[in-house]
Length: 225
Image (cartoon, rainbow, N blue to C red; front, side, top):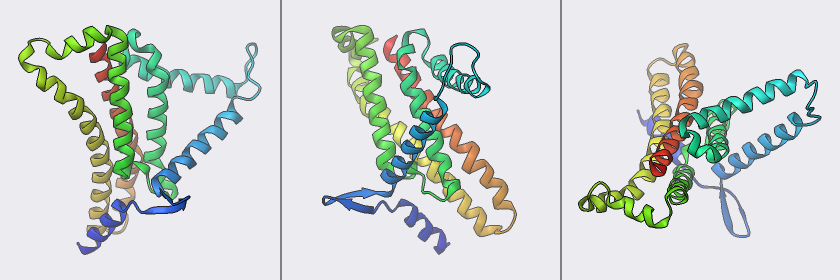
């Protein structure tokens, strides 16, 4: 079991990959840059020579993929939050790739709590902005005293609890999948880990991406109601 402890320490290690002007750049940031560059290049290649009439099969498949992705987020937010669907679709795509990138030998950025904390902070800012934009500043402040003024401190505390829960849920599930895989490889080193790897490295990674976006959309919908 000592090997498990060493592997866990290695996964939690967030040392800088290199430095720029004395500022350390962690591996999770580098991998995120790689994901961004890959998505940007792929987007430029796939969106070339788009046509209004007689679209190609590639264009039809691309439009179907974009429509499906936005449909997922629009379904969570409803008609009121349609303008935020593009952001949530982008987060869903990033998290999906980030959780799957371990298959290609990279360390998933979501194993760095700094990344999950930053995503959670961005989500809570968007949640509160959606509430203020929908209700106005005055009604937004009044909402903390609903249904009764007595629970106002609890409602204010939720401003901290929500991002913390989003951060720890994503980080804990991704790290928990790693620990389970290490235990399986320790007990049954041949054959069985491949089957479970298909679940934890692919299916579970996509599920966690969806859960994060779903909860963000759900909190936004609550803030706007």
